[in-house]
Image: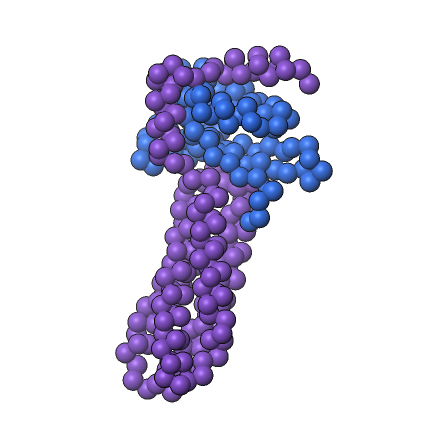
Length: 162
Length: 96
């Protein structure tokens, strides 16, 4: 899982690096063909990113995400790399379209960008990341005597009946 | 060794809001299984050396039989004690 997340993050970044190189290409007609291939590559990467998120949740709900912090961080970094790359790609495509070129799949770029943004935002909000402020608040409560013991909780539960 | 478990008030409030059948499963893992076997703890939580995650999976009795994935943050820095300081959750009623 973490390996895949790191790989997709690296692939998004490689695409971004390629886009930087592409911007210095002065053969505009040829560069449009390259740009179309970059769009296709990114669309495939989005498929992989979607599957990565699905797999991460499945791992969590199966009780197998013992390093939930590390998994969550790696997945989120991959998604954020995707957002950066799609933003850069959208800008490049818009530039070529404004120059009068037709770029295959140009119409789908805004929805692909919106999808990866939503995927990243949803994951960041819902993955059970540890929150420093919540941990420290809990530690303060226990230090101040605002706690219940495990035995007390079990007694409460038994007292409720079934 | 069986550790004494202390649960922060805010975590208790969270637990009290869970369906009883979910709480039964969670308490078994958090208050019975974990204190007798710390190898069940997950990874440490950066930047703390003594705080670990502890994941618990539970099922409710709804027709969909939803799975609950709770991740507790447990401090093991006090001798003989486990402090449950925080909890985060997800459940399958929300779209992935």
